[in-house]
Length: 493
Image (cartoon, rainbow, N blue to C red; front, side):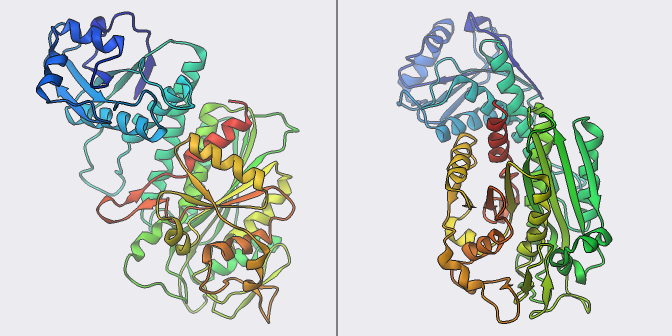
């Protein structure tokens, strides 16, 4: 996908397969009036006839127009409000992309001159369009003989000033979009392909692609030497060896403390001895979407060349039942030295994360965010629209919430009160790995908080946000957008 910026002096001279105009019912913008005049008042006539009302994201595709250099014209309604909400802008741009792609257009130009989004700069618009068209090009191809046709659009021109700030915004949007697509691809792969070793090989590929990235992989022997017996308890029943993958991006000064991302990478989760119901168990290939988001984010960060240091840690394992699998009632010792009574082997994500979070402390981090498809309780609480956000620092949580709004990748601040901690009490260990049926997403976060007391930490429960089910089944790539927006803000972008 080629995305470029080009100042528009005269809308009638724009050379493209399809010119995209975003208009209101009154054609109040000068650029819309100029196009209408060049077309002999055709747009005005269409509106008078009632064929186009200018409603938000309404489209009318004209495959043949006269008076413009562009042979085709797409008009997209912006509604009657002078300023748009972020979500309204997304609806408009997605409508433009979908309509022109359905028409088979290869080269489109979008005019943004008359668009205002509340509390957002024009650079935000450029970044957002570049991201949306990049993610719209994603197709899963790995295991299908006849994949869906590729996006027809090969070139997008945004009519705007070709400044450094605008070019940087377009580059950032495209980079984030590519990172989201990487996360989608990893998430959509079946568990017999995307194993812990596969995640390690894909991570190593980042190290080969970017000089700023280095990758190391810890095997089970090394993890045992470090005392990661909580993580290893999850992988005890499978033939697939666990891996702790460490991706280091060095874009800042050597002395700068890194921001650490920790991803849950359970490449398939049967529940272990606490076996899940058979219905929808195939979707448990998505239990590594936290890990996928770490790989996608690190790829985007390297592509943007952000001036900061980032460490990605992926706790990769497979959870299977067998004669050697961990049993309910078993007690294991974590890397931190704290003991855990495993009451339910299907609460395995926190068992791999707790050792990875302890390991994160060795980097003396500026911040730590773990990302995990952790609890069904979070899906019940928030559905698919928001990730659950827990943190030991309210200011940090507020920062992430704001960056999520900017990225259109939202989270919701959930409680992490001490009142919930006693639900994890155990008679036989320092803690149990579940806290009973009440507030399941909260007690899961409380469990993780016991391993994150030495640094600024946040937990994103993406169980509802990481993939869509039903006929539209597929990974979403979330929360790559939120993570990239946060890291870019830390780099001063």
